[in-house]
Length: 278
Image (cartoon, rainbow, N blue to C red):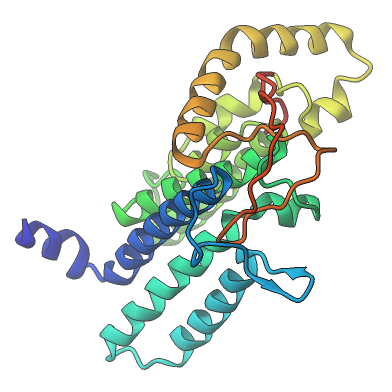
């Protein structure tokens, strides 16, 4: 087991990335356990909101500070000091988890931690885990690498294919196909499939081009309901199992999680809509 770890992680120089990956996941899990305990009124005296006067300090603040400190440390630590560099990577993972756990708060500039919009934070964490996992396995963003010709010609063709793959991935993101666009950075030709298919309802692409085209708008909506709705519901159930129920309404008073969340009453069942535009 240790030999496999050495050959796949240590020798290729992926130990800092591995430490980032592990600390990121553990921090996210412990954070969600903490906020769920507080929300369920099971929190102890040491597990509560961080408050300075009347200001509720969200844990994204601590995450930003940790990321800043770890980033500066990683730039200043000499390469031969691998242990210190690995510690900096771990701290960066902790900070990144705290920040992405409140990504929806940053995106909407209001406290939406337990609302439907708050699911965006969990989506961001899942994406970060998936992409970091691919990098840890040695997968890299690629273009089409098999070309004939001289070394210079092959290099230019590879760069062009990489740029084309990136452009198609951006189109997928604009069409609301987040996972297709991001995984397509690592799997050539996948973004091409997503780019030529209909955009998801509510996505920027659909708002720009489908508003005056009822036909495409209707086909996109039917495809969303028939094909995307079931896996989205499965994803929501998985998210709720890990991160808790996002069932507050936007107009309800709430106190979002810093490392802790003040519990409240009157939470309602979240909408089971098609999650469009995500």
